[in-house]
Image 1: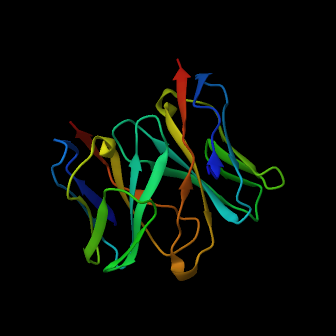
Image 2: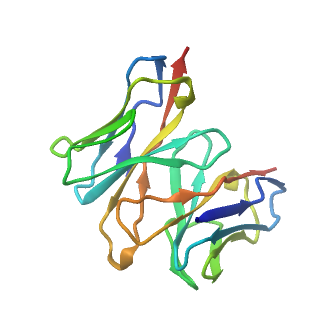
Image 3: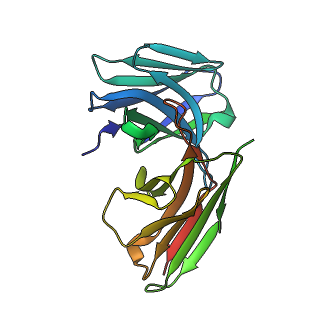
Length: 115
Length: 113
């Protein structure tokens, strides 16, 4: 059962325009959501997160929006730059005892920025 | 500052051979440690996690095992590799705080031939 879904395996966006990456989840117990960026042959790097008590979090060119009623979140990148070309993973976690945060990842979306 | 080391970067092993991948973390104590695998065309699958020395939780039944002999050392092993064990293996650590996510190592590309 895929609890975190990224239905678009790939996305191409013109440089300077907005990139919007989408993610859906099914587990209503998830209360933190994160986005990671991954280049080939490297480990993913953390981009931005949002708590379920918020509906928006912004960090520079990156903004994450959360719609709890729709169980949907999105990552907006404005303006898109060539260095943003990578695979983006959505992840979610639910509160657990003992301080152990286990992340459930989506399958990723490959973003290509066209110069 | 905290750093995570994972080696080797690439590995080609024959079917039936053993495996040992090592991961160490510096600059923190009592981290949560994780092993993930990314198979070709798929997302990140959690294999094992550990909240302390000798404490290992397995997420999926498989041909692999994990051990944590020291606080900041996490080892992924197999006695006999299968072709299906090929993939990109990632070690990660996290602090005991919500929403901070993981810090991943650089990964090991394992090809079983």
